Length: 256
Image (cartoon, rainbow, N blue to C red; front, side):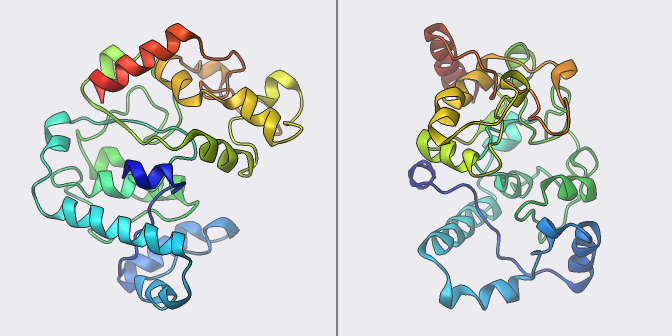
């Protein structure tokens, strides 16, 4: 998995079959949202495999292999570490939620065919609230919602240590992905504008994971004007320090 993420894989896509009822439910909560219009059945996706790109085929093989491991019944680490605290670094794979939710014992009330796909992350959580479908399995107290991009600076000891889950991606690939995804996490509230180019974006946003592992984002600072990016640990303009890097490394080693 680490090698594949270093190759630039942003996440995994789950090509599974869905019943007509489940697909109708998914289409219902995505109705009217152009970004969510690509929810399709596994049969339709399978028909596309002949013309699929190497990257999409790699994603498919990765998702199948991970699902095989998850369904084997041999995965006990997740059960022992419950409640899991998912530290979601932006542009490292929102679809990791599919793997976490389908690990044995994590979400007993969710259908095996329920998966999040593409940009429908929040809509998926609205249809399958983790607190209801996965009781006791995820740490939600320190987050606005499961899979948000909250930093764990002051909550690490209380909630994350020994329960942390994180996906890391090759930094340059992650930065480029964020830049081309509407300059994700860019601190426009601070600069009063968007980044002039990819280089400026990368210079400011480098060290995102370190910031998230060592800093918080105040709830008061979340949101902001609708035309400016929300303030976050990842997008905080102050660069990571050498001390912060050491703390982040220590936390990765002992808490995840």
